[in-house]
Length: 363
Image (cartoon, rainbow, N blue to C red; front, top):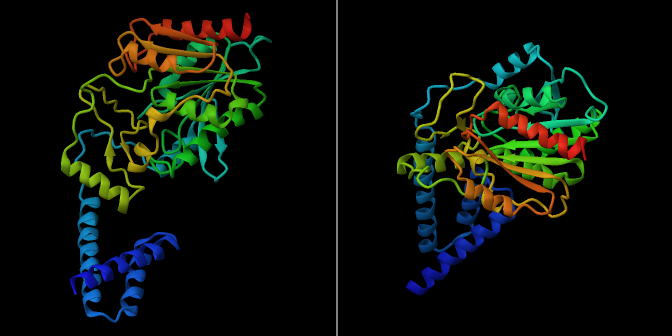
């Protein structure tokens, strides 16, 4: 009898898996499948096993829902802005900018910094900035102003769900959509008439730049990769509280578009600027396996890899390891003096502008 019960239980699970693989997964369809199996069973032991499975699933679901909807206790008071507030601010923004429609109908905000004067050698060159975690394009005026003073038209993209762009805050539907947004921004600048687009990524923007360049390798003229590596300094990422971890996992299952992850590390500076994003959805923070990102060998363009000598997140030797994995022989390594992860002095940006001159104008 025990042997027959084991076989019956296995048959139930196999049948359940076959049903679930044959249709899009959803909790409603899961229970429908269970009911369909229940009506087809004649053996009481097998029915009891099915009821036990159903009860266990209900308990797990209720526990998960409770965790997912448990109120968040944030360490950062800056809650940012809503999607609706971003739309209002976007409409009233008066500085130079572009509103780009993505292929799925979302509106992305492109900030623009124009040079005081355009020289013929630079008028076809655009620099596109991809920002770091929590940020948006605005703070990158620290780079854009020196670039534009150097004669380069400079743009900064607010990622979907960040800054003045549309979309659920701190979120992207999936990795493919995020990469599509980045690639479409590059193509958008090409359509504006810039034959050469140099993409600069800082921190998370390094991953964004790699993804975008791999997606449209023929559309980029060069890359500047700053303050990024495959491995951060030891001790930065402290073990997560088990309850917080369980809550994030539950939110990932039951509320994937809900901001349940707080970006926080000891010693970080928290700005009161509400255009910053400190709270993210689980699917955004887990969509990339950064350690697996590599630039395609098909990309044969100049690459500048840089890091601050006082960067508190990434050591110079770890960034150099990342640099060594960049393909090709058109690459340079740049150590920015007196620069931390987020505070980079104007002299360093002027140094990058000189690299642009040397690479694209004076060659």
